[in-house]
Length: 91
Image (cartoon, rainbow, N blue to C red):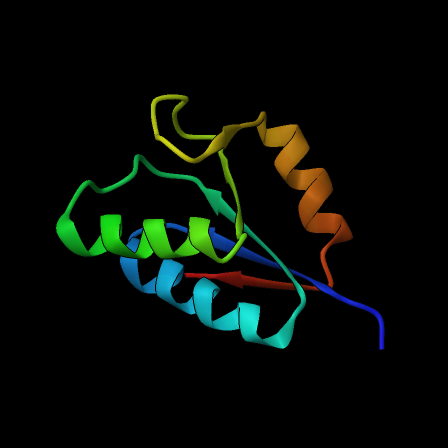
């Protein structure tokens, strides 16, 4: 079976979306997270972000270049990646 790409769009429930992204790695598919709002720097979000990085989740941001662990991309690049994704989850 071929690996699929699962795109997760982080909006207002960021820590929960990151936790879910970590869980999706169990499927051994590619998981890409897209930050569209400024990252919330609360304890739970920071813990989940660390876990996502450890599990190899690719992190992209169109919101800010200041968020550690996130690769800054333009909205057009995000759109291209979303079109290519097999599944998209907005959270």
